Every structure is written in C-alpha cells, then in structure tokens.
Image (cartoon, rainbow, N blue to C red; front, top):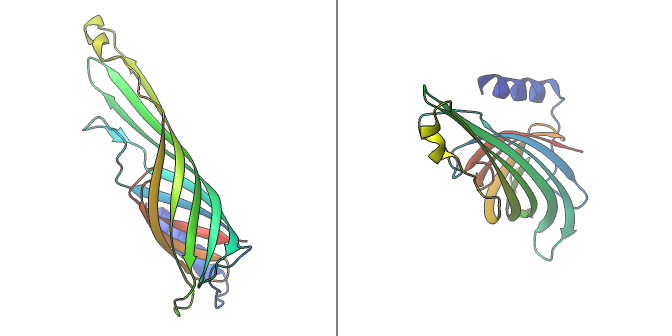
Length: 184
C-alpha cells in the first residue's frame, strides 16, 4: 500500500501543476483504488488479497442547479484463503456494477470534485473447498451470486488538470476506497 501511495505522489509531482477545473459535462475519469473493510464474507483468521477496484465515469448531463450527473461502470475484486492441516478453502468476490453520481460544482474550492451516487451491481461469489479427509466434506457448499443496490459519497482532489487522488465511502468491494484518478 505504501508503494501505491508513493507512485501516486511521484506521478502527481511529475506532471506540471495546473489549476484544474471542476467536473463538467463530457469529462471522462478512470480511477484505480485499494479498499479497506468489507461486508463480504471471510473465514476469520485468513490470508486475503487487498480489495482492488477500477471505475470509469462520463459526465453525462448538466442539471439545473450547480452540478453534473455522471454515468459509468465499476469492477472490483477481493479474495480470502484459509488453510490448516485438515482442509483448505478459498472465497472470492467479483463485483460488476453500473454507477451514476451527482457531482456538486457549487463549491468554491479549487481542484476539488465532490460527489455522491448509487450503484447497481452484480456480486459474483466463487468458493472452493479441498480436504483429503471425508469427515470435512460437510463444509462443501456454494455461495450465491446476487444483485445489490448501494450508495456512496466521495471526493477527488486534482493535483493537475488530469491527475487526482480520491477517497470514497460506500459499498462496492469495500467500505473505504483510496486511489488515483486520471481525467481524459
């Protein structure tokens, strides 16, 4: 995680600093994030991968008040693994979603994009279980895939006209996502 933040810092410092504009109609933003905390199941004391997400959004409509509505997509992944002498099991989640957000443009803070929105997602669960001892076979089973509707709020701070850091609270692959964004 430390390397990720250093990479974001290096990238932002290597770009000429320019006064960025707020989110506007026609903007395209691609974001990569690492998540902390999750409502998705786990095995207790297990090894796990970090929650990773990729988001895309397009400034679609200007609204009557100060703001722009965006549409976009979301892809997230997280997995857990537990092993002991008797068995091993692995659980993974892939979240695929369609997102829309309202970007409030009425703030007079340079380089800041604040937003809130909703996501409709399909959560795909994968589960594998392996044991040489048939006694443990009762643990075999499946996790269900399901649709989910969630809300989120976030903000981006642009270090240049194209590069930003972001923080987002809500439900996707994690409760809190921190990462970098690129506007094109």
